[in-house]
Image 1 (cartoon, protein in one colour):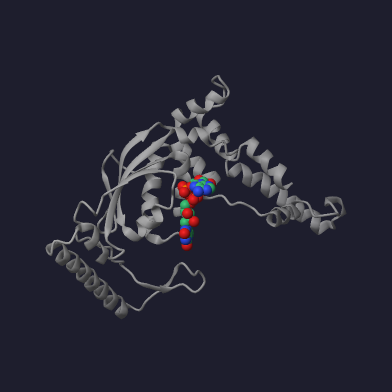
Image 2 (image 1 turned 180 degrees about the vertical axis):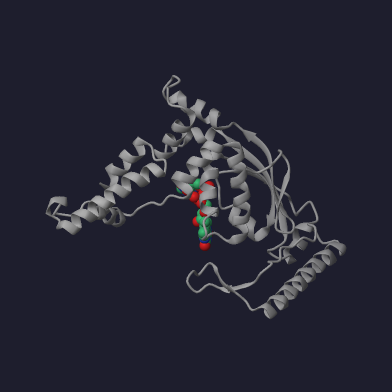
Length: 288
Ligand SMILES: Cc1cc2nc3c(=O)[nH]c(=O)nc-3n(C[C@H](O)[C@H](O)[C@H](O)COP(=O)(O)OP(=O)(O)OC[C@H]3O[C@@H](n4cnc5c(N)ncnc54)[C@H](O)[C@@H]3O)c2cc1C
């Protein structure tokens, strides 16, 4: 578990950080809000209730908790970040303030991926790494010098900033409720998300876990590490458990043994995974 005090800065790359400023609520508060639906305190304890809610997409109680962060990141990360509209934010204004000379330079350069048009592939050879690093550092100081030169000539900050690169840093205050934060984390922790934004999302996740541990556990089980099955995938899984048409009685001896083994494995594994009776019943309803 993260050793963290409110307002500590958690560094990301050379100049960036995540800093948790305020938290509204906790797991018990979400539970309390959820109980409004039933107008009484039920017997079911916090963990079971929160897991039940998330499993059944009853998400409004999770909107009752929220977290406010101060985050600093390069513009190209911020552009991806602000696509998540369900938040409140206030960003530093480069019309009022001169941006400091802080630019992101990757530690390692990689080639364009061939199997994923948005991603990276193999690292470029070692000798080219240095060349690219120096090239980018030169580009950074050139664009920053041009910025300062224009400011010195009296050009307005809102115009002079136009010569700056996408890797200059910005910072903002960002508030999101826990329901939307789970959606944000799910998208930005995914290996398909760009590595640099993933680095931030991982820290955000650690902070969510610290303040909403039961909700976080349910997020991992039902959102982050879960998959949605297509109709064809559901049919495929059903076929493994119950061969179509023929049924278990029509199988030959080898088929029957395989089926018994499969069902035995299901029974042992589901217990090992800590699945509740309700979860096992839900699985049977979907696939058996
Ligand atoms: C790996 C990856 C690659 C991406 N690539 C691109 C790209 O190439 N180009 C690009 O433009 N974007 C890209 N995006 C951004 C992506 O399309 C989403 O805009 C972003 O992830 C925010 O998701 P969201 O809209 O669900 O979140 P939020 O804006 O937080 O919205 C949360 C939910 O609220 C609802 N909602 C919010 N606003 C509306 C609305 N106006 N209408 C209807 N429902 C709404 C939706 O249900 C939505 O899921 C990429 C995202 C990822 C994770």
